[in-house]
Image 1: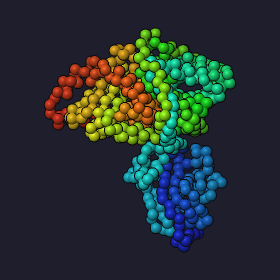
Image 2: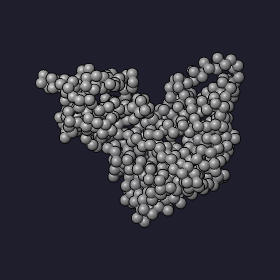
Image 3: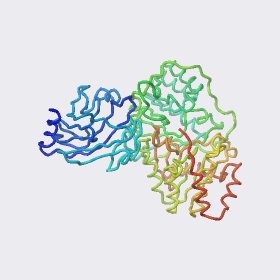
Image 4: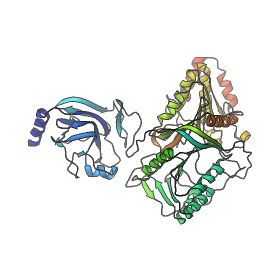
Length: 558
């Protein structure tokens, strides 16, 4: 009773409180019992007179408390520190050195349904409710930016990097399988002090031999790999990890275990930072099919090497941030494995590496800045070329977010072309690339848009598959990234990419796209005819009904 009376007096008799707003709330954490649940306020100044309530429990700040920018209040300070690596500013329970709040009853946030109300001297000044303002999800930190709650998904422990744009950048563009191995081998051979490699899959013995050679000449080599890729770590990767460990290369996995939940669904980024000067960003995994010997068949992929310390430092910071999480585990033992070898089928290269200079480069990072991809497409005024491994729509009534931006661009009169992979695993099911191509073309026909989609003819180009995730806009700007066009990749995975603003580089990748586009079809060879017959149905309303039905699918993808 005394505590309750004291709290009432504090709320009613304190001088004017500082201006604060609710900034974050995390009610449903990964820990059993949610001892680490927290909320945060934004503002500056005295916190006397500021309280929060969910109408079941109430907590007020001590009369001498002062905030600066972001004020975190956790249920249990020790549990919060265990998860986040630092104490909160205040805690509800007396469990850590963090200052305690003054409480009436138990302020404990509901996982699926609750609200948090901010009070200043007893008057409501702000609130957030779930469901309503946000939708509950385990492990998600709900945050407000520019007055909007949850502008993107932010899971516990994830980074909040901003994009960086730098001018006067030099580098080299390359295309797989034509010239990717030459560029990669030359870069690794040039390493003199440090090499950081982020990998979703690492099975290329030529690359691993080059990493071992770099380590033998004194280069600090660090590999961060996905510890639980789809299908598990492959035999070929275990063989490569064994070589690296034997050469004293530091290898770590990002993965969920009993002590920590992974921050990202998958670490799917594919980049390398050398000597804090060069950054290689690619659409491809580190596999023989992506970096085959010259004249051998492989995947269609895109990549760039950026020669600029500003970009390198950015990605080095991303790498070190990711390397420092509780979900990172050193690889000390490996399983037996078999070496993966490149295709022995011949391939006639058409493209050589293309140097560029005086370019402007913008970093892209998922989930942090995945919206840069939509912004790029929205900026188009004349043309958009899109080459992807696949596109999977987000729900039964909603196109994948980047595809939706591309369709909107076509509605503005921009010529949009979409080229998807034609490999059997992307075309044989009832809802994959050939259905997506027919859907896109149906939208184009129904609305009379300058929009067309095709499936690549892999045999005509002697390619294993299309694995790129590339976009060329207005013949000037190019996106090279690891982001797949589905729901999970931009929102839940760690992904990396760059947007290169340079006409010469855009022409280079546009030429690669156009070459692949030449023999593409409006569906796979087995279904192209059906697609044409279906499109000839002349009633637009019926077409739109079929579009809606075709959207009623989705796939689990990386």
